[in-house]
Structure formats: C-alpha cells, structure tokens
Amino acid sequence: MRILVHDYSGHPFQAQLSRELARRGHVVVHSTCAAYISGKGNLAGDVAAGLRFVTIGDSTVVRKEAYFYRLFQETRLGLELARQVRREKPDVAMFANLPIPILVVVAFVLKLLRIPWVLWHQDVTAVALRSFAAAGISKSMGIAAKVFEQGEKWSARRASAVVVIADSFVRVHKEWGTADKVTVVPNWAPLDEIVPVARANAWSAGHGLTGLKTVLYSGTLGLKHNPVLLVQLVERLREQGEQVRLVVVNDGPAVPVLRMAAAARGIELTLLPFQPYERLPEVLGTGDVLVVLLEADAGEFSVPSKTLSYLCAGRPVLGLMPAENLASKLLQQAGSAVFPPEESSLTGAATWIHELLADPARAESLGKESRALAEREFALERCASRFEDILNGARRGIRRTGDCPAGDADRR
Image 1 (spheres, rainbow, N blue to C red):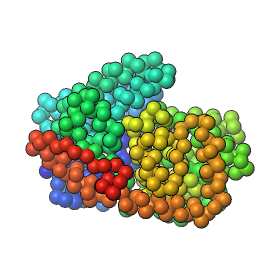
Image 2 (image 1 turned 135 degrees about the vertical axis):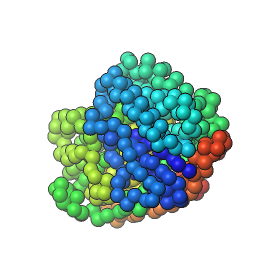
Image 3 (image 1 turned 180 degrees about the vertical axis):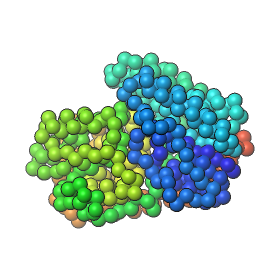
C-alpha cells in the first residue's frame, strides 16, 4: 500500500509506526506540522526504504492563545495538508491530533478526491471545549464547542475507519453514529528510543542539576492542565522540609504562568524549552520523580502520552490526574501514585514524594517496575499489525470493528 500518515504534533510513537509499516514493505509518507511547537519524535535519520518524512507549515508558529487568528492559521494549514495529500496520491491516509478546522478541511477534500482515510482519534476536542465553557474559562468556548462538535462529528462520519485510544471514546462515537467503524488501540511509546539512563548524566550536568533532588515535567502544558499545581506541589514539599528543584521542559503559554507562580512563592525553577528528541532519555533520567498533569474534565477523553514515555524511562511517576484515566491505571499497575488534580490533594502527593526521596531503594524499585510495565505493554508488532489491517480494510472499503482492551494482557 501507499500510505500517508499525518501526525500534526510529531509524536514519537506515530513515527515509529510509520517506520514499522515501511519495514513491512509499504510505501509510507509521514507528515507533521512544523508550525506546531511540541516535543517532537525521531523525524529524521535512519529512514527506512519506502519511508519519507515531510511537513506542512513554516516558521510561523501556531498562536494557540489567539483564537480567531488561530482559526485562520489552522484553516490555511488544512488546505496545505489537503494539497499535500493530493500530491502524494496515497491509497489510504491516516490523520492524528488534527485541530478541528484542519480536520474538516481535509475530510471535505478527501471526500472529493475519493481517497479513503482513517481518523486516529487522540482527543475528543468538542468534549474538552464544553468542559472549559462550563468552568467559565471563556464565554466563547460554549459557542466554539457546539460548532466544533458538529465539525468533529461530520468528519468522523466521513472517515472510512476510526481508531480511538481508550474505551471511554466509544460512547461519543455511539452518540455520533460512528461506533460501527471504531477500533480501540491504546497508545504506546518507543521502547528502543526512550531507555533508562543514569540519574547523573551529561544533560543533568550541563544544566547544573546533578546532585540536586528534582521533580520534573516534560511535555505540553495546555488548557487541559493546571501548570500552577507544579509550583504548589514543590511548595508543599518545602513545607515538609524537602528542598527540591522543579524542572519543567516546555514551550508555550504555560511558561510565563510558571515563571510568575514560582517567583511569587520563592520556588527554585529550571525552565527549559523542548529538547532535542535524542536527549529525551537523559532529560527524563534527570528527574527523581516525573509528574503528569491532567485536569479532571479532560480525564475521560484524553490520555497524556508523556506518561508512556515516563514509564519507558524507568522512573517513579506521580500523576495529578483523574483516577479513571487509562494512564492513571497504568501508573497504579507500576506502583506509582495518582492523586486528584486539585490543590487539596497536593499535601498527600508531596508526602508520597518526600517518603520516596528518603528511600532510594524503593525509588529504584518503582523505576524498574515502570520500565518492566512498559516492556510488557508497549510491544510494537501487534499494534502495527492492527493498524496494517485497519488501513488495508479502509483502502478496500471494509468496515472493521473491534477493540484492543486497555490495561490488561491483551492490550497489545
């Protein structure tokens, strides 16, 4: 097959899937958006035969906070992606992490071009927007939620197949009338690219972090997170007599919020932009404890992929996130801790970290269990076979339904 995979964010495991599909003899074009700032995966070098990496967008960064201008940017990017699909002429395409304006444009154009495509549904955007509107974040969110939900639903109905990352997504697709073409395949992380490294490493030394106790967050921080919780967590640790450096690797609107919150509370903060992907093992290895954030309203329809990278890195992980989230269940299986994402939970979360820092043997054991769980759960071969079947079925016009149960031995 000639396959075009577009992952707007440029995440590691989507690129790994494209490499595996190319290794199996398919001709794969892997597309990402250069204008979207996030931690990127391995998108260059060691390119397999039959695999090519391309981008949409340019150096003009998508302005997440400027809603109306962002709508214009994303519509333009949708047209650019549609032109890319037309140039490449794939037998089948698959799209992940697309903002709704881009998704609608591409769905419309692919309908005209009669190219079958698969929606790899990583977040239910409309549900998230409704929750933000209910929380009073923005009055315009309520209107946007209704418009975007119609666009998201319309696009899902145009897709030949839908892949969702958790069982909780199926309910939405039942409401949309698209559940008959849904397959559940949980996300994973590249075991061979994100590996455990020594706590003292070249990256930690280069940033003056060797020998310091660190709580580390690496990844996106958006509307479905509350970045101030990170600062408040370290503040609670200080109240318990623990001197800890907060390390945050991120680019985006959370940066000034974190800087102001840390300065107001006198918290030591190392704030760095996204690092090169090849340094990610060292970055994650620098954290004595790695933290995941996810707001309660986003818990059912978003699975933070950074959790999966953290497990691969073999470190203890603290989740400030809803207990029902799939990633929370993985952390609990690994023996790490999950607390509700609210200020009232921070004292308990800080106590867990404090006790862990005082018991290096336990911390080492939790790190090993994190890696062991990742090795049990994240085998690529079965997931690649499932995607290969789904893509081939979409190309042939076959509707496949089924699921890949989450959080158990049959997950992969």
